[in-house]
Length: 163
Image (cartoon, rainbow, N blue to C red; front, side, top):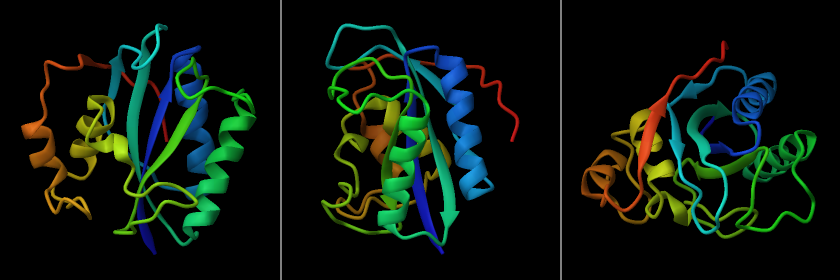
């Protein structure tokens, strides 16, 4: 069994696609551990604010199977095949961690944006505070405590999804 963490984001019909994404993940993986839901400004482009959260999952799937399944779920929920990196998203699912695996393919693990974006780090610190970053060897709670919180503004918003 592997412990994985996934970042979920949406800035198009946010509540609908967050709920749809969570339901799709629950259908495939079962029990989900959820962070709070956060609203954040778009980073890297001018666009509507995002809803973001992090999901913890225990799975028997391989990293390749998980990466493929996340893409399938994104495409089933309106993700364009030619979506640009910094653009609006109906549903964006990023594999952040797969146990302590360090690799570049089929996904960058641990995902680089964990330490760069508050909308990834804060929710990850909520669901896995004592877990250690496999490269930096620092807990996510400590990384969040050290993060420059003035650089990106987040606010918690209600999550209206029932598992």
